[in-house]
Image (cartoon, rainbow, N blue to C red; front, side, top):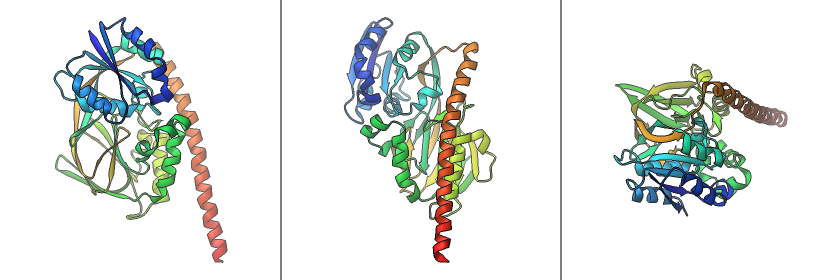
Length: 345
């Protein structure tokens, strides 16, 4: 077998560049041929994968979720599509966490060498493909508008700072979802289409099935038709803090489990596709079952408990931090409101 190692040297503060020789040597213990290509700018990974699809048995992809998305768009639904080995080196690495692929390079390499192949669903929005998230609305632009330098320096916090600057300027979006002769019309603060356990660093749907041919669609209502609403921000925060299963029966949340559908959205709405700027406006959505073969670790039943405990404690700490932030924001608005009343009096 032969493999092509495609990686983004800027991801993860250059970790992959420093470990390139080690990675290649380890890959040579399994593959007869190991070729290496670095990306230099956005779109390179897609071009490299397109040119080499069918020439290699495996693509080893090093980078973040955006780099993986470029590869998927190059090989999706191709009869000669190679298997994928993933070395996550991005900022949030949501796909890797959903599949229990370690962000430690040595452990991720072991997954490629000794792991099993998992057939992961992917999806198609108009003429573009994705693997884990399609979203629009509140804060969804932060992931692709945050500069790489800022991500390398501040990590996940860089997304928060970027999103916080624009979140109060966000306008609600009119959405109409059509499926099986059914129409769902909503004025939304956020539309979230998920094929993942985790998004934006939060475990939003820990019970997600990634190979059942369906996606989870979540619409967060906006009480206002044309302006930002603090309530919609609080509802969105609860969704990320407590997850889909807790929130999906709430009145302000619309939850659907769908396969193929169309979404009519105003043309100015930007769609976030796997953390990247995907498209604008309305789109047709199609789930492609088992559309990607990717190496994942063998996890014995005994280890599942340990892994779930670790994930629970990590998520608890993260959620406590966000809850404190939630309280601070609420207190700020309460104080501002009281001050306005006092000045008015």
